Amino acid sequence: MEDNVVKNKEFNERIVKYLERQIPAAQELSAHVVRMMGGRSWDLFGVRAEWQEGGQPKKDAWVFKVSPKGGILEPHDPSVEFRLLEVYERNGLPVPRPVWLEMESEPLGRPFYAMEWVEGGDIPSLADPRFEDPAEKDRWGKAFAGMLARIHNLDWRKENLTEFIPPLDAPGNDPVEREIAWMEQKAAGMELPPTPALRGIFQWLRVNRPIISDDEARLVYGDYRFDNFFWKDGELVSLLDFEMGLIGHPMEDVAFARMLSGWAGIHGDHARHYEELSGVKIDEQLVAYFLTLKMTQITVIVSLAGIQGAMQGRSRDSRGISLANGAHVGSVGMLGQFVTGGAR
Amino acid sequence: MRPTVPAILRILKNSLEEHVIPELESHYARGQAGQIALTLEWLADGWVEPLQKTREGNAAVRSSLMAVNDELVKLVQSDAAQKDHWAAAQSQLGDMLGDAVEDTAAAQDADRDRVFKILDDLVIAAGAPMPGTEGTGPLWAALLASLEQLSEAETYYGQIPLPEEHWVAT
Image (cartoon, rainbow over all chains, first blue to last red; front, side):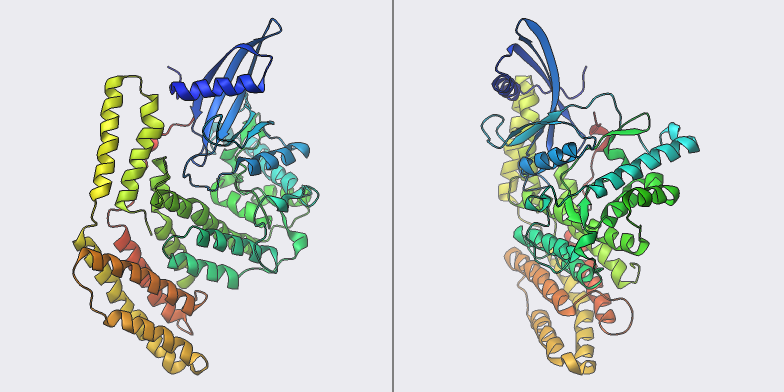
């Protein structure tokens, strides 16, 4: 039995109807739809279609990224990620080709976008036996660090990214202050009861923030971790998960990589490789600061948003319960590090 | 904060209706799942937070706030430059601690909301978190203990587990 085949007849019929609209020359179109479980923030469906066109058999495959109802990364605006995907593609970075953007709810009940279904790669575990060979480990680790350098070298000003990715028009005198203000605005906009521990963390972040110039700001990938990408033979063949992108400091990505990418987290020679390619010096004090900022960001945009979706009765994904449940506990734990002197 | 029990019950109901029932091919299974969904809504509608749990949680946080009050009194006495600032915060906290709370579900729920609000106000008054024994360090240590108490009071059911074995990625 194939895993996660979608049996919801109405949904499958909607997919076919949408494909027929997008490919008007298609005849006898059929689609096979599976639920993909790679993330918890959007509803992901893999769609394989076959059809006849001009007497010839045709086939193609896409991933549909559909806005969930009351999910953990609200507001789910597929146009933001679609535009960002176009920017990455235009700048030669390995991403799935963006195909269709649909902001109307009519076709599938919710807005979505479709992208190329990248096949032929895999998402290796950091504990994969391949990495017992130090040379292999070094090759993959450098590829991981080098790709981050390419992202940080992207000319985000030329692409007008500030029009559609955070911190948007949040107030502040420097990039970090604007990012903190954006998080505070987002938390306040949820209209939830007070979260005093989180407020304390914001206060710490403001007072201890490094003052960096606008020149140092980069496109921050936001979710840069080794097991979040497709790889093939030591080459990173496709970046995935673009919804946490923002304009900020490059050490934010390095901090996140350190947090969740184990040996591949841009250490030692891999760090030097990143520095050579990006021209950005890795500053360990900044990495420590951005680790806290990043964990705060996750608390705001994942846990608090999860609570909001639950409390307002919109959430429909039972996995969100576990994520939402930890918001206050997580914030108190972080705050404890500042008060007991555990944070730098 | 955490989602309330009715909010969690409604997510479960929504999840059944959105992700499970449409995928079921057996009418019998759909009937069973539909009955569960309706029952979850029925439970959510009638849910009343256990008075004993709320009462115990509020009492524990209030008790820990006594130490915060003591630190505020010390700051009123030692920090001449910000004496009025600390006095205002201490007065607000003192009023709250001095108020009796009726032993009813509604009154204890309202007191829980008040505890959240006053802790939020105290965090604002305390400024950036500080370690150590100087300045606002002791106040922050007391505030942290109260926030930990609040966290414990909030999560008396413990963390909700995630059944990893069922979420196999494809």
